[in-house]
Image: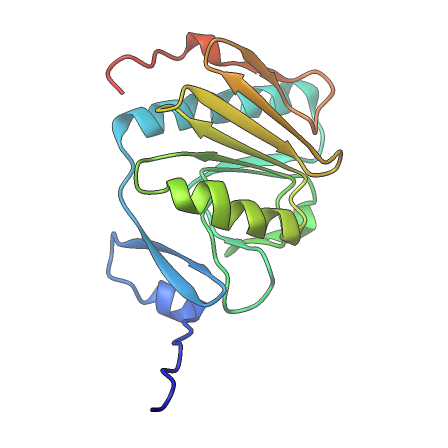
Length: 183
């Protein structure tokens, strides 16, 4: 009996998706994404605003960009992701298509359908691609898990705490102001 040939997809197929349909491509496999819920966008907006305001107040080369925003982790045609929040400090990685290479810091907000991707698939991809810091914000678990790949540490926090960013000396994000009611 012949072996089934595994099908690999390319970024061009992602670009040909119908208007409004979102997907990511990891190692040639397409992963379709559901539209985010209100609470997801509320948390995304809060975190993105705190990072944006910090960068504006302190200057520096970094850019913070929320989804949808294309990140080409491997500089190939087989991996394309849209992190919820990307912080890129090397502006030479940025062009009109998105970010070419690993952002310095990525934040993913877990939705019921994205747990496997955020906790396993993306964790591995982000670490091997050279992301310096990765936050998994999980409102259902009331947790924020911070992976600092440079210092090889993992820290867990709850939504009642402030979480310090590893790539900045004095940026902390206070999650206690986010209401988890009705989520």
